[in-house]
Length: 173
Image (cartoon, rainbow, N blue to C red):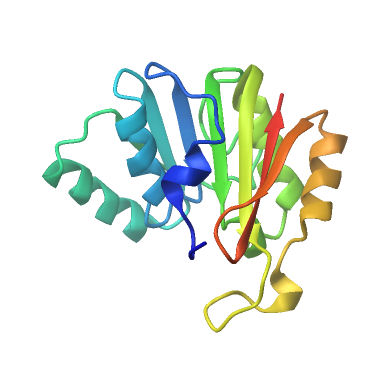
């Protein structure tokens, strides 16, 4: 295992090259960039509340000549915060984001809103404490995420480790 294997994690998703996807809390956008390559005929949205992270991503997209990514500055804890149309995406990823937020339910509810019926929601977050992880009291347990997902009518399809320190939960709308 390793810290976080992006390609192996994405291999758990059903992906076709023309799908639409989003990374919530894109930050360094490692999943956005990987998805952009896996979905060359599709569209990927990188969403974050931190403008400086999105600005850096825009520069990287330009340098790497990646044209199928849209960058959206937004607050995912607000109603319709993603600014994306309802039932329009095939995949939403929420990696290492929930531990940083106050309203975890609102973020997952927004993901459900923008997913098509049958769409995939992949949540990854910290499972083990390390020198570089959040404090234990800030971590979000897989059980809590499953509880929120269940209340939103999302079905758990798969649960797996995404590297040595992260759990992954794949839900279907």
